[in-house]
Length: 226
Image 1 (tube, one colour):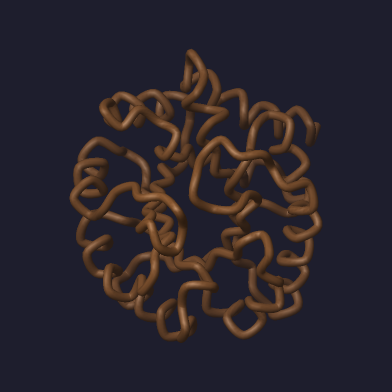
Image 2: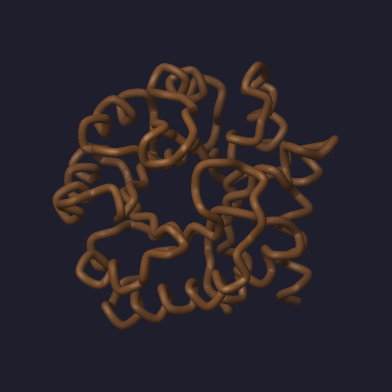
């Protein structure tokens, strides 16, 4: 297990009150959030529609930590520049949505932002093999993407271990991000499996105190590691 001090917490605004995003951001930043995770959905790649570059631009004005933008959309190449201009510090595309993955990853990096590749639960880890040394991070979906509040898929832990081993084998030190069903119970297990960045929405924003919930998520991992 990696030292828990390297852990990053990325609260997902998908579960926040969209009428009060500025307040939501301030609360989780007060709790020690390292990133703000922004889910972009188009109603085609996933069965939901969320937000686009104008909202990301507004969020960027309120956030003091980097925006981690997750593109759950078809043809993400068409929107990369717009999201970078809106303020994304990192852009994640899905291996399942991109035909020329190497080209897309390097296209994102050409704008000076970090490029990540996401894998859906049913996508085998081998899909990363030829891109492992090009990505800045890997996002392992621990639920099927599209909606917040879903239940963590237990076998995700072994998948994270497989991703860590593949990255190590290919000579990559890219961090692993996980997204879906992350709470104080699943977080220690998934970090023990090799995760570095925890995306959490429901377990933070669907609580009376998102600031305390953000702190509690990190504390749960630290306590487990001690």
